[in-house]
Image: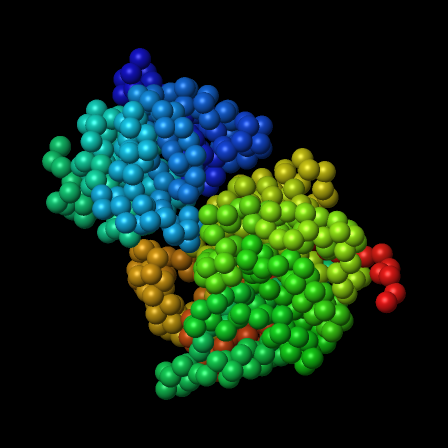
Length: 220
Length: 366
């Protein structure tokens, strides 16, 4: 079964910190079957997952990745290079990470990446289908901003990626999580979603977000 | 040493303030002004005065223990603490000697919050790599708790020289120098505090405080899992108290805007706007308003999260000394009694003080 088909509601999340557990919680609420991993063995995150994302299963990194076609990468940015290069082969890899100098230290490659940090991530995992998403809204909005499809006033999230089918699958995830989805264009256009970009940390409607991302947003 | 049931204190980062004409004051004047503010806080019944740790020209809190000692000499009652001690870039032995000595000169009033802080200039300044943050904090917290609880210490680690059967002076009486762990929202940090059996200080600077309820639940469950008794939970957030809500907004907003515009440009955050400021007051983490408004919100959050401690990081930004004194007066004389009144029917459960020093055995005579 390929991701994007109506029946596939599996999600793997690599990273059980604030970001990973928040996304896990939202996905559980949306009816997803979620497997989540931290930096050590599964039992080290069992209590965290039980309290912060009940219903998600704490597993090893390998098990989280093999659990689904759709994987969220939510480790601290200064640790993503610790993961094996072929770990995400063939997977749609949602890069939900943000580079923060005061957390990650000075990382020249990330700080000066001309096409944004997700292009660096794609370069690290060449066999993955990287989509930049889930990184630019304030994390507590994942809990309190969720609305059913068609509800008025939904907050929007953007997805940027070179693999168009992967972007479409991520946009479906965004919709199921309770948000309107905006196609932000190719992966390098994802730079606009980063902390120093024009949309970070603020809740926008789909129209507002699309306008702010022009001209990088591609037409549907 | 007894622990008050509810501890309501103040935090400051030692912002360089301006005079009435808007000119920055000299650093030494700023430092003495903060000492005066703490003396006033003591006189109006505030439980603690807690100073941060930064190494930037706009903050005068690079040596909190010295300021706290000066305050100790002018007061008898107020507790003297840190809003954050950036333990990762400190030597735990020096933190112990500085604050155990402060505890002695103050007759048992010293306390600590150890954590990350939000600015990172101490890393390059003292020669550490930010990417090592977690390892540094873990190692130094390990050594520091050994010094508190288990002297003489034999210890080795990666980032400093080993100790062999080492006494570090002065010995602390049992229950002294309570050491809280400051956390911003990372589940791993919460679990670490529980693992060490140290009380939890939530740094809540944006968004609805209620969203920390799951982290509080995680902390309590982790304490049980690690075999520790229940421990206190506190929170610190920004605020300003004035005679009316409007006056508080009018006084605080210009300095808030100035501070966060600067931070936003430096750090890539969204710029502050009045609508966002008001939203934070209404539903988020700003405690800005009249005494009744602020007291009501503090009490509600303490009840919601089961807190026994709240510190108000008062008067954010370069606000002049006189306006800072005015808010301290109101916080002590009106807000704190009202919070105690509102929480009188929700007593905080008794908690263990095992998180402070164990009381060193008698040290060898010289």
